[in-house]
Image 1 (cartoon, rainbow, N blue to C red):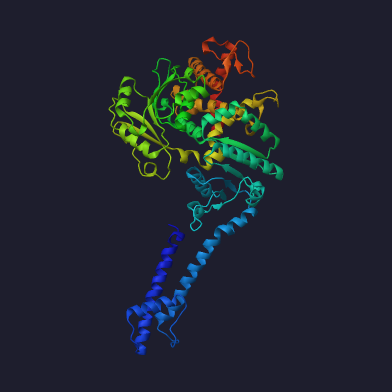
Image 2: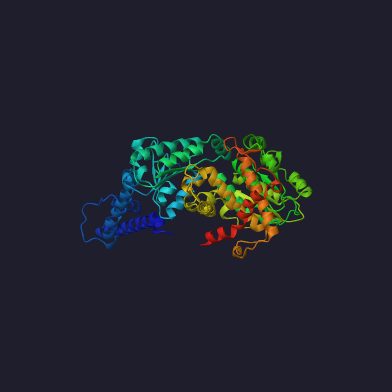
Length: 565
């Protein structure tokens, strides 16, 4: 425990000692003077010493208890008064100094997501300024106690942006719960920074929470325009990120169904999973499986979705018209507060779930559903991935069991995994994706500046970044298909038969990416109309096209070797 945490305990103890010494000293003083006083009078006289008042008619030398207390008592009061004044002006004083700061990080919201990010940034030695409403002027927020500075103001005002030295900040993070507000604010701040003409690299991290909203913006070519805008000013970049997209990506990497059930050949069973949830994370996870759920069994995976309210399936079909060609989606619409474990058990007995994902984005609801799942009778152990929101909740911090009855429990905290310096700013998750893209660029004879895919990673459009990310993430699916674990990647050797299987898996993954991006098969390629000649089964491809997939597979050991350096 820090001394600062004990500060007021120490002040209270010192004050009590001063008060006790005063009573003792006055008792001795009045007794020697022949004056009778009861203990109420003595206590009153002791209280007066805190205000530097002393009984007239008595001079030094006094009893030592009184000599100590008449200096100690006002010292305690002066300390308390000084701390109070400093507390009242602390925000104003710190806020007035922000304009002189540089290389700080500005965060434009104070919510559960941002609080965890702020704490992590402060722990890594960063200076953090938070633009948010101050809930109680009389109390310091927790992040202020940790070292952050909270300031109120209009983030769209150039004057306010100058006062918080936005043009000198290292990063800015727009993380309000309103996606459109985040985007519009980021663009406004971007324009301010460009006007300042500072020769300093800055990144504006902009949160868009809804994957369907991301897809709509992509269809409107918004991200292409954003990339072109970034190219005009190489020292400032608007970088879009999605917590749910990032969480679903990490979930897939850690808890893909083939992690629990080995899928090594086309003879293996169909993967069948259950997803329980009705919000954005459940949607993101379904999209993730549609993009990357292409395993060595070469079969469409089946997803049974337990949800309530809006029909997620129809929303997904409207936004991703080909999604049903990639996954077999069955929906069960019911009130999740009244989750029917008997129905789950019946479905599970008829077609056992490879794994179950609780994606409710509500910790209390998730806990209730988990409790019901523990009552489900099953012949084999059931792997359950429990996603949580609150990093400080009981299930996150206190509940450490990894096995409950027939359930193998795997906990995943969305905020802890997604809102950290490593996840957001260091981009460790993209390490292999960057290696893949750089390897692609190094293999080109000449770089065509007019070709979108020929740009360095920083200037690469979001669509191309995601293509590299998906290729990188699917590498681990391929390796698991051959029985390789994280500890023996250096031993990779492919047989011709394995190369052909992995190549077909790679083609299916690429095909899914193209289909979900709106591409269709056609006799003649037309990039503007999104028509491609290779959106057909692997066995129908010409040999030279198959070789692209084989080359991608054979290149895996080299890519992993670069990642380990």
